[in-house]
Image 1 (cartoon, rainbow, N blue to C red):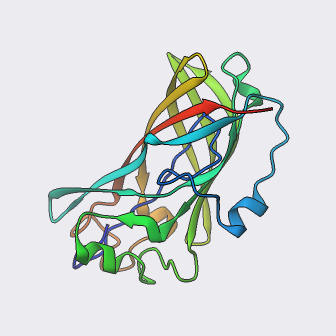
Image 2: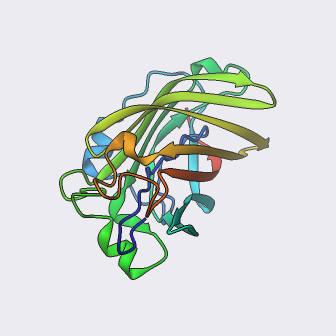
Image 3: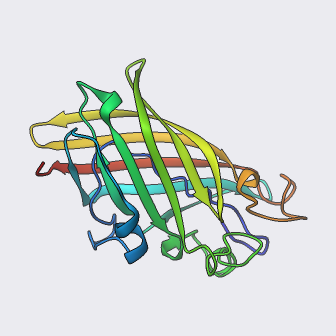
Length: 209
């Protein structure tokens, strides 16, 4: 999240578990790259994301002080059936240009090569086809691709379904340096924490098969 020193946001994104087919801001269609690259073979239930009640938020520390931000948009496709979670598929895109890290300084710094390098890598992507039951919820195992580098990311989440509406809630901790977010001298905890916490909520409506 950018400050004078730029912070990371491993946009983690959001490993949701309800089918996303719109953006978390205005349900706009995915970008040309996103929509053409999403391939789903699962026969599980489709879910369409609703902008209201959905968010991808993050938090970290800058000089020991907490700050937070969010992504105004994310899109993609997810299929999930709680009765057979192993058939679920998640493929989510997050436009890095939609980030709001809570200050003009951070927002202007994050796109730079040292941090997101968003001109060369405009999107983050989370993809998973391995979902299983875990404790009182589920676990989506996948890869988060950010700044051209793919790293394993496990996302535990809970899911509440009421009729045709579902609400997924998840959280994860990321080490931004695994994606080369923040080069020296920003690659330590001295100025900006390496750990970034993700807070994800997705409200979705059951879609057509």
